[in-house]
Amino acid sequence: MDSPTETLLGREQWQELAREHAAAVDGLTAGRLERRRRGERHPVEDFLFEYYNHPPAKLRRWHPGPGVRLADAAEPYGDRSGYVLAADGSAVLDSAAFLERRGRAVTFVRDLLEATLSRPGTHDCFGLHEWAMVHRLAPGEQRHEQLPLRLGQAGTDEVVEGHRIRCSHFDAYRFFTEAAAPRNTLRPTRETQLEHEQPACLHAGMDVYKWAFKLAPAVPSELTLAAFRHALRVRELDMAASPYDLSDLGIAPVAIETATGKAEYVTRQRELMVASNALRRRLLAVIEDLRVAAGLPHVVGGR
Image (tube, rainbow, N blue to C red; front, side, top):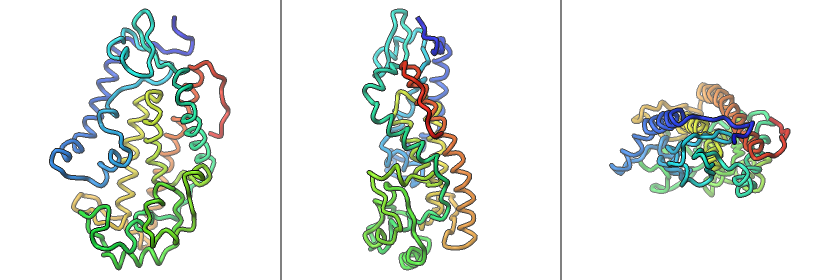
């Protein structure tokens, strides 16, 4: 018998949604798969798969999210982890079991998103984290050796040394070179992530995608795909504002070493922050739906 909080999708309905999702992912990841066959890399598109270690095949798998029952779904959901089958062959996410198994992760993501949303955005970092990752490196030590530095190594070092660096994101800061790390005015750590995360940070914006797929199969694939598309846009600005020359890839530089470049960066950063926050709120709503589907009380958060 259906729960009052459940939505029932007929087999044709959910199969069409799954097909549309798979087709969208195929279109977005075709370049990635082709480059792998050729042994090539793209610093924007491939980053999301390599850094987050979430392959296209997993992104392609469709999940309806909590409180959605799929009619006649023994195939393929009978064999999928996280789902429970009813006697009539319908399948639904086992929300209670998911929370029992992944409760700590769900709580961490909820607390992090709410903490991030509670703060104003910081718009004076100018993407200098990517510059700090190559500061005073010797030839052959860059992560993206196939990409030339727009200003050369000496010019790149001058930009780092001529700016205040204020990176709040641990997973960016931890890649700073030994020479650059002491120049950061903050000392973010994994343990202090909830204290430092702020909504304008590009890496925090990309991470919304990570939190969505980390909570699979509880997060609807529609939201995970939206977060992936957003992360691609964020990563493009991340690399456009970096010290690398991506003109051969059709990506014009955002020259943050100039006043004009800084202004462009902040404008685009503000636009991305609005989109990041909208995705954060959607993910928080899914977490609330998950609790409701599991029969738990509402939680009043900071969103």
